[in-house]
Length: 69
Image 1 (tube, rainbow, N blue to C red):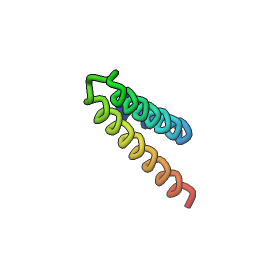
Image 2: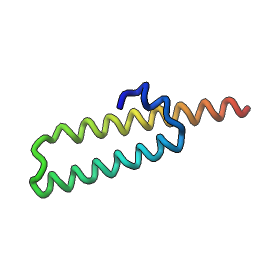
Image 3: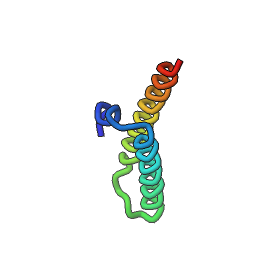
């Protein structure tokens, strides 16, 4: 999912997306521990997407708080 796609989501949808990505990261770690995962670049990709979602979420929350004032 690109950053532009993330910006179109609402705050609650972003929070749910972050939770889903963290679950996916945890599942990937379990797969690695049980030798079912061969491509370890998945970790970097998931972490990057979590960071992007967190950044967009923070931007939206800050923008919302500024509009309230």
